[in-house]
Length: 102
Image 1 (cartoon, one colour):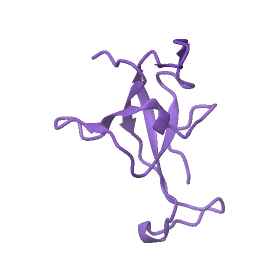
Image 2: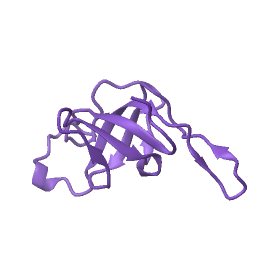
Image 3: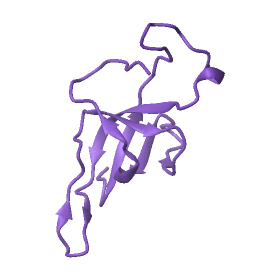
């Protein structure tokens, strides 16, 4: 599959719901929950008003964060993968992490 434009293909990662001190939180106690993803494919980016191509700030294989609820395209046969607009990515990890802590 080739991802076009300002879109990316993401695969969900399991996130641990715990505080910095290591206390595990119940799902109903997590107020600003984020979703952690591994980037599988990235489009070329978007063009600004002058037509200059602006590439996304992340690459294939990196771990990124999105809000819990955002618009996306979901596959029927791959429920843990989604195609999203690159503008929904809020942050990326500089170093690779196996399972990020919230």
